Length: 581
Image (cartoon, rainbow, N blue to C red; front, side):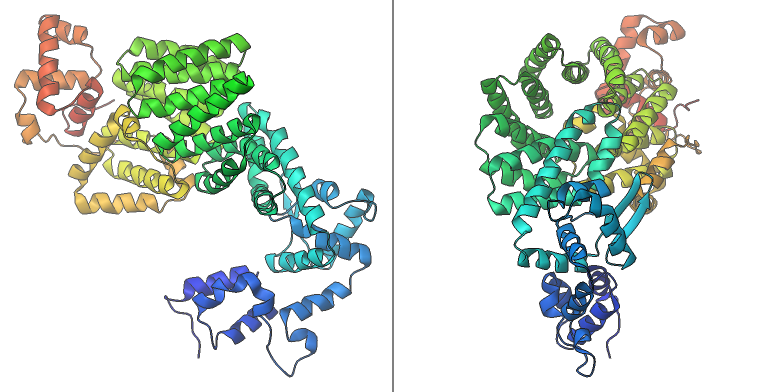
């Protein structure tokens, strides 16, 4: 007697999903359980019509195999209904009426007939209609789609229809591409997400058919920024690798390499990303493609910066900024400024950070580039942190997170959750901070995104906040809160991060070895740093010379092994030396 257990439940659930819950299919699958384990059966369902042959010998012939039952239903359709039904099999992720009219019609099936035929297929429960906010969308159950595709092959229409579906996808992504850099980018990103199954089907057919590398290159070039923005890094990588291995034409290869570079960067593969961007830049220069050259230079500077090659990244950004301004490429200008602000941040030049952000923000807002806007707001938040302006920092971090949620950019959501977790810890809410860290960690793992070492070092609150939270909560309590964060749904994690933190009790740990290492005056100065005082203000308040304050600050940094005033502030707050208002 078969029964569902904790060991086979996952496979049984997979079988039910793959067979779309169709009763006959499940009955025939159950008959195979006499000789196959659930895992074996689930692995063989790609060829379900061959596998699910058999069943009751006393039933009607059409009930003895799944294929026979579908044949019987198919024969009841009119010839035009059969034609549309089999042609719809090329849509792997559902379709709209307009898509069916564009892909499935010809002399034998006029576009004007599609609506009535589609309505008939819906009425016969062969096609499912989904009503959404953007209008009706249709799909076939996967079992029916595979059956319809067999009929498409038998009619010798599969190559023609797959090519038409692929061309429709190319037209869609190339129409979408310029909109992905403007205010309407969310609408178009959502549309590409809805068509992601179809886009992957078009990529698979283009790769397998040998129908030319150029169409494949056009697809991946237009999809690269979408994959990066939406965090589909693990999905995009294999398609990009396959495309780049086939494309020789420089004008197409440059864009595909750039897309692959963005995905590699998002995954934290910095050296590989740098190689790809350098080759893309060479292709762009050879073809005279100035816009691609600007983007390739900014992307390459990303990788150089995070590999610590600041002597190369800064000149490259200055070149990209100059070229972007010369050709009127405002997106490239704004991103060059954004990256220059990070270069100044790494050098400790806060005035340079302030100026670049001031110049980049209005461009990003004007053209509607949410990702650049979110990034720049995040950097401004760090600047506020350096100045101990915690209320302003929180507002900027939360606006950055809100924009990332609108955009659906999961990698940057993870980065911003990390930053807000650090700020939450600095405010003494260690349990909530641990949950946010957990939510950020699992999100990065899910999308294949990496936060590079230099990125975490720039976000000075992160490491100290984790240490402080673990110390205050204790190892087991921190682990429990972190795990609770890992289990949060993405929307719930974002909502939690956007709620103002409730500061909890934080007794001063004045007996710690680190605190005892500082003199009374040094403890006083660390507390004043955390409360937002500049060295000049500290000197005025304590009635001592500015040079004396500078010396004390140097001693505090040296004794604690820290590098910045921001880290001193986090350290002092975590130990209860000062409370934030």
